[in-house]
Image 1 (spheres, rainbow, N blue to C red):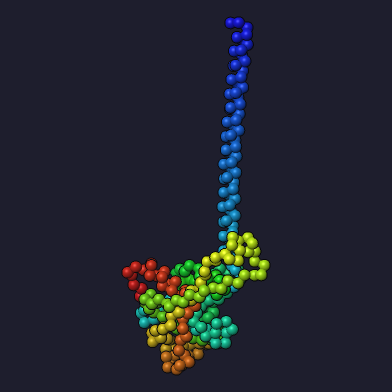
Image 2 (tube, rainbow, N blue to C red; image 1 turned 120 degrees about the horizontal axis):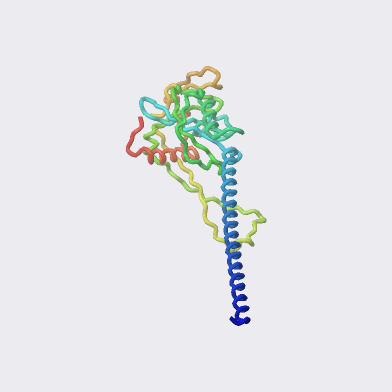
Length: 287
């Protein structure tokens, strides 16, 4: 083979080797980049998963100021399942004379369920071991968009007692009545009040932007079955540590002892309870 052809052959061989090396290096670099991207994506997902978990755990350890919890007490009266309610004492500053469930503000270090149980023992003058928690409702938005946590519990061996410093009287509604009766619901349109420095310039259309209309539903149960609800012998004491005193029969106590209207958040919780139990019970009966 002539010398020039030998040189050309050698040059082509070296060039092919160089091109193969370049291709191999590029492939290795691409693979490394893909591995790096995959590793980066995995790191991002792991970090996000960890942050989200920690955020939920922190949320479960702290609640917005004013968050509350209530107990929905079930008991048996004359062989029939009832739900117990309170009428708040007239001397209370917040919602005096209104119907409510036992409950109150969540204190630091408490879980919502612990709050519901503690408040029930204080307001109904019962021991903790008489309350059996059996479930919970979905969280409800209370007054001022503050969370309200509702727990369902069975109240064992209840004797009609309460703390008169917080409660005016107690009554029950048959569960069947709650399941068969829906509240009247009225919608309130919420007004929109913008601060003076609201940045309309960031919004398409500015002050002419078409906002969605917002409303708040307020339920009412205007007619309660009082002939089935009232304890014939009411026992209230100023503090649970004192012996309960027997009051006059509520059913004979006259106009002043009539039940107020069940409405607002307590009516909303009552209806949520009915919806949940209708869904779960099917054709079963509870006695």
